[in-house]
Image 1 (cartoon, one colour):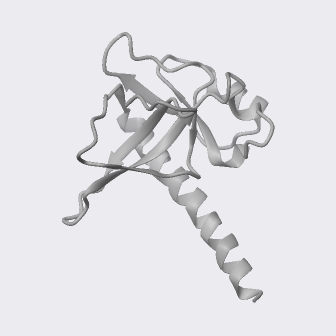
Image 2 (cartoon, rainbow, N blue to C red):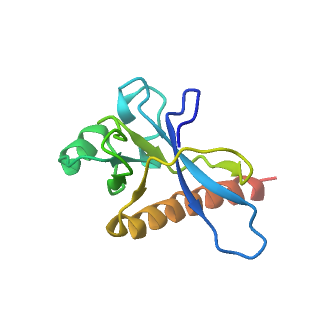
Length: 137
């Protein structure tokens, strides 16, 4: 789906709970074509997301990222991600169901597990840091 702003796209997944009324989305950004090397970007929270085959191991090492690259199958031949596209697991955007969205593709079956595990790992670390800082008060 195309999002107007600094965020190029959102990677969306729906929860199948009975009372869920929204999709939870991770931003996909290029950081002005610098990838995760941009100053101030926390590489630990990012992974490559791609629509065309790449040598992700080399790029991950080069940018200091440790999470597995995520493959996306584009909906049409025009729906391609930039080579410097990165998914940010540390941010969540909520898109209500009454918002219009444009779907550009979906994560491959082989990338679904790593996508969910890396998201969980990122947020479990954030929770640990948050609870540790509260215990000092």
